[in-house]
Length: 427
Image: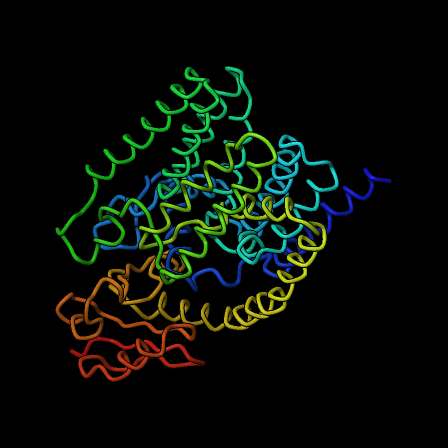
């Protein structure tokens, strides 16, 4: 009966991401975030043998903003959005299975280990990971593989952990402090040879990536390429205020202390503690999902743990209808966007340069090149000087950008339909 209940709990933990992935099976929201279009475009370039480039940007600079791990995973499947969606969702059961086995490794009983999977399975970032072109789930899986195998004292585990740690870094270089925390854990366990092999592999990977960045970064050569081919910061956090980051740090450290009080500190605890500290100094995306298992494991050590874990799962479910509704809203816009792309492909010259919030997706659909309003301090005021031929506005673009484009006196409207606006530079 206990084994059957464990399987039931694991399936229940998987249901929210399954529901979300089924609702977004063709990724209708692709292109609503700037980064997902960049990943998509980079994966297409890799799949076509053109290298790791931002092919949608004038000059096709080498892409140095993100490490190539996630686009490399997508590249073989990028021609089919259905396969992409399936690939992204398959990471969800892998992550939950790893959390379960990690819990058993940490001497949780099988029922508690399954219960730890529940809140993670309903966590909004986890649910969205299987339906958005974002590397969060891949980063989580690779981090979990790293911490799971580095708990073991064998050369096979050492080599696998080194490979998984290097792959984690190539998914996001913002994970480096947390991955360095695993080195601290292995040293504390007095496995110095294992720590040396892991650290050398991680540092060699980090050094290779930074050398690649320095050799290919555009610097200030062209302001229209800096975001794609500039020198990215080491860490990132742009979506949270300082008090939120401080609260997260305290929560992570409390969870690590709770799990560590049961037995010796785990590799996951060292990763989470180091990563939570790095978050304090991060101006961009910092992969908070990778902190989820440590936080939830801390709940499992508290009184009334099963009630707390079940309540956390139900709380996560409350966000699911809104997320599914957002997908449906973008699906309704999908034909509208495709119609605009069809017009662009037929009515604009192949060499036309666009200003668009997601130029990577525009390029993938029409082969027109584009720059982002983010690349210009005054998007429309400098568009003329930058040689931009067309300004493109989509229904989900920010209102301030829509207004600025509509009021620009140097461009005339040539297409307007269902919230899509295209303006051409006046002769």
